[in-house]
Amino acid sequence: MHLHPADEPRGWLVLGHGAGGGVTARDLLAATGAAQDEGLSVCLVEQPYRVAGRRSPAPAHQLDAAWLAVVEELRVTAPDGLPLVVGGRSSGARVACRTSAETGAAGVVCLAFPLQPPRRRQGAPPQSRLDELDAVTVPVLVVQGARDPFGMPPAGPSRTVVEVSADHSLRTDLDAVRAAVGSWLHALGT
View 1 (cartoon, helix red, strand yellow):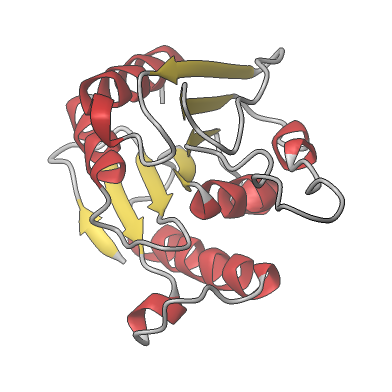
View 2 (view 1 turned 30 degrees about the horizontal axis):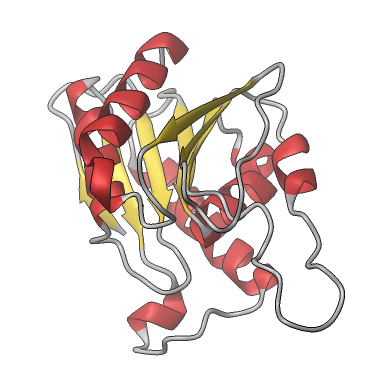
C-alpha cells in the first residue's frame, strides 16, 4: 500500500495498477491528484507479483484475493465510517469491478478499462469484458481514450463514460483524466 492521506479526509480512493505497469502510471497519479483535491485520501495498491519483481500478472482470482486483503487492511487501519471508492487502470479496473460488492465500495473509477482485447490474426474474436462493468451495482466512472484499441464501453444508468483524446495509456490528455475523475468524485459526494 502506498498511502497518500488527506489532512481531514472525507473518504478513500483505492487504486490498482495495470498488468504491465505499476503505481507510478501517469493516469493513476492524475487520479490521485484529483482525489486529493476533493479531500479524499488515496491508497495505491501494488500487486504482489510486481512487488516480487515479476512482469506477468497472476491469475484473476489471485489478483482479486490480494486486492481484498489490502482493502481489508485499509479498513482496519483507516478511520472508521469513511466511504470507500475503488478503481484502477486497465487490469486494476477489472479487479475493482469484480470485487466492488465485497469491498463495500461507494463507487468505482475505471481508467482505460480493457473492454475487448484486440483481435489476433487468427481465431475467434476475444470475449468482451462488458459483463464485469455491468455487474457493478454502484456508480462507475470510465475514463477511456478515444484511440484505445480495447474499445469504448457504453454509458449506462449508473455508468458515466468520459472519452479523452488518448490511447490506452491515457498519457496524452492527463488534464482531462484529472478533470473527469475530480468532477465525478465531487458529484458522487463521498
